[in-house]
Image 1 (cartoon, rainbow, N blue to C red):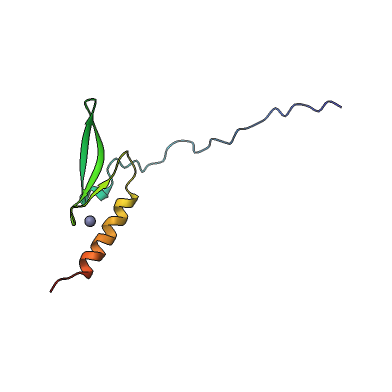
Image 2 (image 1 turned 45 degrees about the vertical axis):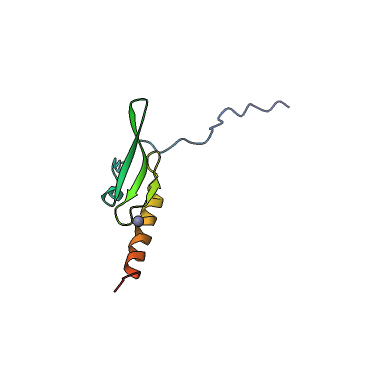
Length: 86
Ligand SMILES: [Zn+2]
């Protein structure tokens, strides 16, 4: 009649015990981009990235959002190689 309470209700195992290595603070993308900082309340925050090749300014707010920069860099190289003005 009375079913025992479902005690063990694990709300999603928060696994991932311990952080593995690989905590790069600077990705190598910054070899090809110049970080542009903005000062907010006396704190410098990275907001944009400037491409060394085409000088475009791309948004790079926050940390860890460099995927699009990488993509841009790749296509930027491809483009510049394609448009070889002779
Ligand atoms: Zn570019």
